[in-house]
Image (cartoon, rainbow, N blue to C red):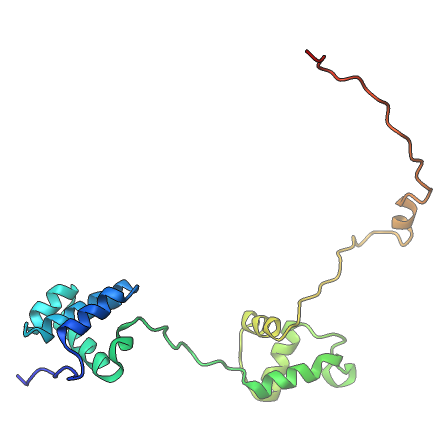
Length: 182
């Protein structure tokens, strides 16, 4: 079995404990206290017990601490999958703002499904409709939908239903209070 990985020499147990006391991140505090045990001459097994983890995790903490210092012991956000649309794709979508050319694009207005299909034909990029919608919203565009209309609605039915006369304003009657004053 090999030698354990040495900790950085520019820190000591007192300094690491002070940083743990000043930190607001509970996970970072736990990790710093485990490393303070090692700085004080304790074994890696004792540090793992203090941290509530295995020896492999303590080794990972030591590597992160040696590379990045105390900041390396904070939880980081997972990088996730890189975005499929780059700045060129977004600029091309913005340039299509004027609307489609019916003879070329075979649509009269852009819908998300049409833009989805266009991205595939132009760049061979597959993104979900939800992702494309999120990207368009981030660029300042909003989904517009027509107001629903019943299929059997007569053309003049709405205008005939509306009240067109001027309102006759009347003062309401003064009504005596229902509870007499005492």
